[in-house]
Length: 123
Image 1: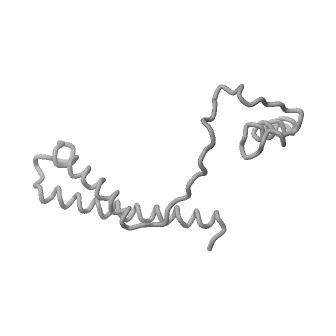
Image 2: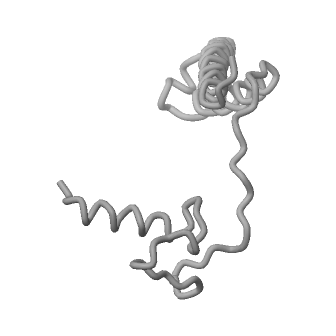
């Protein structure tokens, strides 16, 4: 475990490298010059966007794309018995894939939205 001096210096470096604080506020013992960094930040960054509220239409679009990909996968590759299975069976499997992916996507979006609201302090 790092001693107090190492912890303090690490904290000061983190503050000096523009992680939320201007370099003028940092203690004088740590000097950091802007522009000497090998990694230059390309201007001002946009603030991070939060997740959008759960939307069944958006989840359905994603699910259709995944189901279409699975249909192509099972219809044209021997991985899932491509030529042996009937087109109706392939379509049924794709519909099942759509349903499962839709449910998982909705639960994931709802979880992310509730977590975002909880972090923002909203009910």
